[in-house]
Length: 356
Image (cartoon, rainbow, N blue to C red; front, side, top):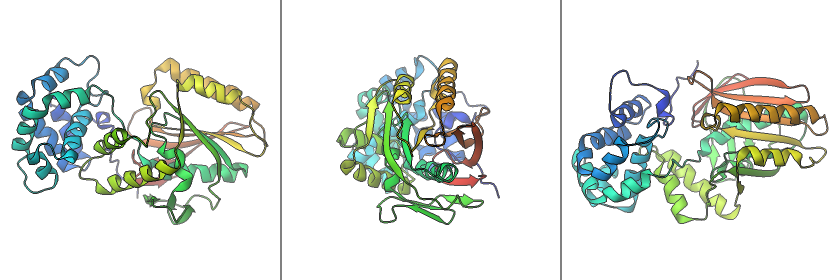
């Protein structure tokens, strides 16, 4: 069978047929995508927004595309952050499932925490989904099979760098056991199709770039990332907590820079013979303009022309297709420039429909 597409973000990929309110639209999407609790939070927030004049004004006067800015996710994460702090108690009780008065809890929260919510929403979304590491690891196994070489990993849009630690996690990829089976982070997505090749997951170096990299050792950063996980998905929360614990000891190497400039500099660096340089990006291209995507493609072409069997190049892409109806896991390898669609995936790695 082929798994049905389920996603949290990007909720804006699905268009509600009629609702005019951004919060109502995103509530509808959350329910469609399997999160009734978040759907009820956003629906109540829409009804009770009159109690939060600062937040209401921020949403009403938002400059740009409110859906692309994920305002629903921002508001939900702000409310989740407050609940995790126990403020106010009626909201904490709602999130602990000790009552189901969504409207009463949201009205009280808006009355007392309007300034906090509005300030929180002014900052962009912050996610670093560890579940995607399973798809990336599967692609690395295919790349290893194609080249016979260990990987030097470069990640674009690395955020907190948690997926740079993917070699420290354990995996069950359709019955193919890979990675560190003693790891606290063990990822076993629902799998359809054959297993990836039986190759070692060997990463000799992992570096990343992000415009605003996050430090996993910073408590505020950790809390922000956890607040962006939907409250009715405890398995994702637990996995993120465990990945953050690993990152306390094995701090990912993420540089704050423009991805295009950074990658150009990395391509200019000598590549060690006997390694495959692998550039990874997941859910990044949607945030780049057409010219940026074109420039990125040109850089890969130029670097690919310099690749050889002793110093091959690979690109692993975990991105929406052009119609934004499916997330495609693709692998391109050089020399020769061969591109393969390896899988159709859940945006957060919950399931993988393997085509490789």
